[in-house]
Length: 67
Image (tube, rainbow, N blue to C red; front, side, top):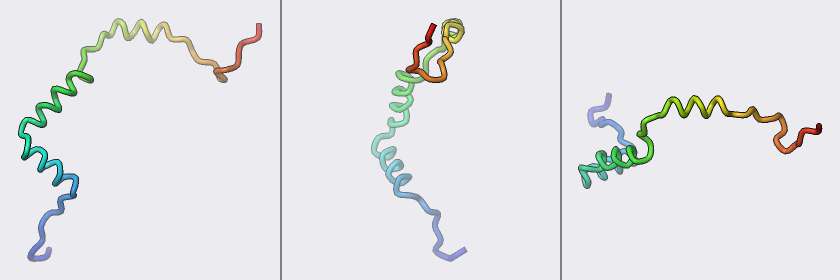
């Protein structure tokens, strides 16, 4: 190991570190934003009904079935 070796930090990592230094509440804001869009309770019963009502797709979608 060279005498003046220092660990490598990419430009992206440096940028993110500088953002966090400028705005200490950044991670908390990210968590709040995620909670708005993604962290939702799952209704298992409705999900099961949706899966049961699903109709299988035909091999070629645009072809009508001749009866």
